[in-house]
Length: 460
Image 1 (cartoon, rainbow, N blue to C red):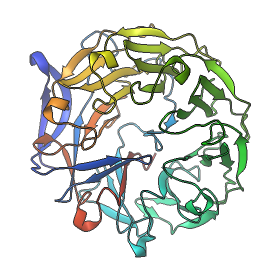
Image 2: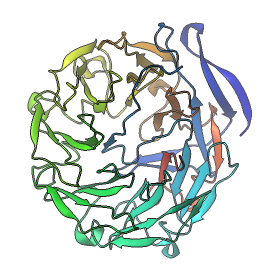
Image 3: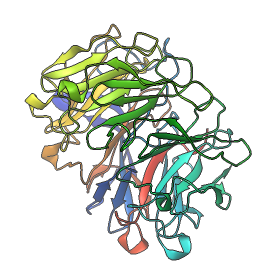
């Protein structure tokens, strides 16, 4: 780390609170994104993370001091295979050439190789981005994230012992691997707690539907079973480029259900024992049948009311639409909440302008954050199922400043523990950064086609 700066200048002379670390890094990033995560490459071997803390509109809304909001619910999606759960505990985990490397926020000044496995090199297992999924999940119920890898042969797990110590990988299941026909470009794989045991089960969206392998609680997993004969590449025609699939607790019973955006919005409710109910149509809006398309219209599953139950939000051609959850996993008809912003007709493009739903004020309700041509735009949630008009709050992170999706990922996570999302961005040079060494050197095996990185909370 280098210089510390307490303020970040926003448009029109306003100041937004910020804990920023400055570092000059005159190099370029190469960032690719696939179905697994972001893969980052930097020739000098330095990872630059931009932290802008606690953006808060001066609209007399939430003050970041808590409130009556419910605990945040975890949502798994095609672009969030490893959700960030914790508050103020952001770690960086890299799957590189020699194995798995970790940098822990606030407790390390350099990276640490925690296991010489799950890596690109022959001696590290010959793991390949295009063939093998590597995830982080709590498989033991102790609150720590373990390393889970889907290799050619099947599933291996390296259990976290705490303090950056991981056990040797244990091969737990001869399924869900490349040799069994599972492909990164066709099939989603998650490790998530389906039964409220505190331990992650394995869920795979394969050709014939959704397959589940239950965690036995003793570091073994049961053989997979077909849980839903739909949501599959062949069973229903669910492909990542056309359809969207999420795991989220839709009815507030604490169990992760399946929701998919296809011809209509379908839900399959979790029975709590590793099985799911037959598909149920829960909404016509936000679907292919209503002219919603992945390459034009971002869609999200997020809690917008603070009741702990996720709502549906999407950016169509003429504005932002929301379908609020009725509390039982069904949804009201979509209604427009932001007119002519964050939308295709206003010039917002999926390939140029990332959009997020994140709680910026600490009231437990999702706000809208978008990175546009000229900066960061925010629409604050009023808490009454309406939103404030979009307003530009920062003139950084923008397309005009050469922030591009292919090279410069941006994230919203709580890095300070105040309950408000912060911006984490990765750029080329002359930025406010948190500097981590050796997380991007081509010469050390961190090239984009060889490595995977996550921002996650390794420890409770």
